Image (cartoon, rainbow, N blue to C red; front, side, top):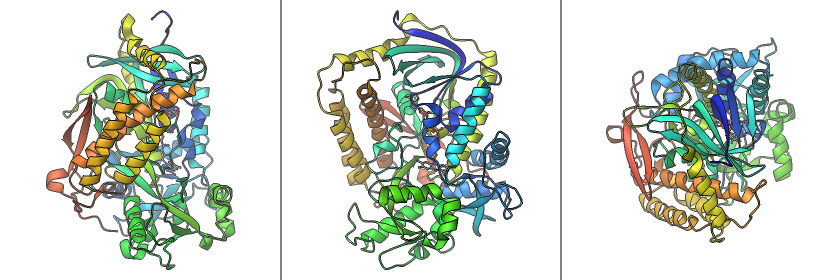
Length: 582
Ligand SMILES: Cc1cc2nc3c(=O)[nH]c(=O)nc-3n(C[C@H](O)[C@H](O)[C@H](O)COP(=O)(O)OP(=O)(O)OC[C@H]3O[C@@H](n4cnc5c(N)ncnc54)[C@H](O)[C@@H]3O)c2cc1C
C-alpha cells in the first residue's frame, strides 16, 4: 500500500449529482464531509433533468400530498412501498420550499408563487383528472437544482475530489469503513477511510442502445456492491420514456405534453384516446411507451413498417411560439440543433428511449443499505438517488418523482449518516485494503489487448435493446441472458492498449463496461425470472399482473456466473392493489 494515498473523513459521499449533493449538504452541517465524483459535480446527469419536481403545493389548483402518494403507488403498479411513497409526497413540499429558500429560481405564477404544470400520471382526487403538480425552472430544473446545491455545499466547506473514480468499497464483515478510488489525473489509487460512506452514483441506461442517459451512467456503485456480495433490488424494472428524439434517444421532456403537446400516428390520430381515455397523453410512461410500440407494430408509425427506426410524432405546434420560448426553450433548441426543425412549426419525430432504473441498491427510508431479505443493515453504508431502491417507484416511476426522490431521500440520508458518524468510529483498515482495486487495474495493464471493448459494448447494448426492452418474452430473454453471459466471458480477456497513467480514458471505459455487463446480466436474469407483467415489465408470454405470486420485490446476487434471486414483501399497508386504469 506504499504508493496508495490515504485520506480520512467522517463521511464520504460518492457522486455529485442531486442526491449526493443534498446528502453532503445535510451531512456537512455536522460531520467532516467529502464528495468524490468521476465527473465535476456540476456536470452530473441531474443537470440534464428537464421537466420538473413534483410536490403537492396546490399553488395553481387544489392538491394534496396524499393524492401524490396514491399516484406514485398506482404509477408503480403497486410494487411501490407505500410508507416510502407517503414520506416522498409529504416531504416533497418541505424540500421544494427549502430549495426555493436556498436560491433555486423556479418559474412563478403571476402573483409570485412557484408555478406548477401537469405531468404524466399525476392526478387530482385519486385519479379523477390531471393535476398541476410539477414545480419547474423552465426546462432546466435539474440544472438549477444542481447549481443551487453545489453553491450551498461550497459555502458549507464540503471538500470535493473531482475526477476520482470509485473502484471498490471496503467492507469487513458487516461494516463498511471506506473506499478505494482512482485519481484520473494521475492514475494513482487512493484510500478513503470514513465513519460512513454514501453511494449516489446515478443510473445505468447505457446498457441500452437508445437511451436518454449520459455516457457516465454506467451503474458503478451498484456494480461494486454486487461484487462485494450484496443484493440489488427490482432490477428487472427499467423505464422507457415515450419521447426520445428519433434515432438519438435524447429526451423530449414530458413537460411538452404537460403544456398541451399531443402524440399522433401516421393517420394524424391522437392514438392515446384508445389506450388511456382519461389521462390521454399524460398517462404514465410504461403505458404510453407500450401504446407507441403497438401503434408502430400495427403499421401506424410514420414509416409504417414497424422497424427499429419507425417513429411517431409529438405535436407541440399547438403550444405556440411564446409558450415554447417561455416554458420549454431548451427542447426547442435541441430540436433546432439535432433535428433541424422548429417545434413551433413542425411536429417532433419521437420513439421510446431507455431512461430510468427503478431498481438498485436496497435501502430503508433513511438511506441505510440493507444486506438481506430480512432487512439487515450494513453498518456505515448508505445509498440515495437513482442508484438506490427505497422502493418508492415500484415497477414504474412517475415523471418528476426522481428529483423528489433525490432531495427527500438524499436529505434524509444526509441527516442519518451525520448522526451515525457522530457515534461511530473509523474502523481500522488493514494494509491490504486496496489490494483488490490495485490488482484489478494491474491485470488490465498486464493483459494483451484482447477483444475490443467497444465491440462488446455495442453487442451488449443491442441485445438489451432487442431482447430486454419494452415488450419481453421468455425465449428472447433466455437468449439475452446467454448472450450477456458470453460477453462477460469475453470481457475477461480485454486488456489495455493505452499504457498511460494520466487521464487514461480507455481504462475508465473498460471498468465502466464491466459494470454495465454485470448489471445487464442481473437485469435480464431478473426479467426472465419474473413471470408476470407489471409496470415497465411487459411480458408477451405472461401478459397479466399476478399479485398472488409476484407481488414481491426481487433481490438478486451475483455468484460468479450464477444469479441468485430471492425476494421480500411489498408494503401495501395503505392502498390495496387494484387493476390499473387511466
Ligand atoms: C434527460 C433527462 C431528463 C430528466 N428529467 C427529469 C425531470 O424533469 N424530473 C425528474 O424527476 N427526473 C428527471 N430525470 C431523472 C433524473 O434526472 C435522474 O434520475 C437523477 O438526476 C439522478 O440523480 P443522481 O443524483 O442519483 O445521479 P446523477 O445526477 O447521475 O449523479 C451521479 C454522480 O455519481 C458520480 N459517479 C458515478 N459513478 C462514479 C464512480 N465510479 N466514481 C465516482 N463518482 C461516480 C457521477 O460523477 C455523478 O456525480 C431525467 C433524466 C434524464 C436522463
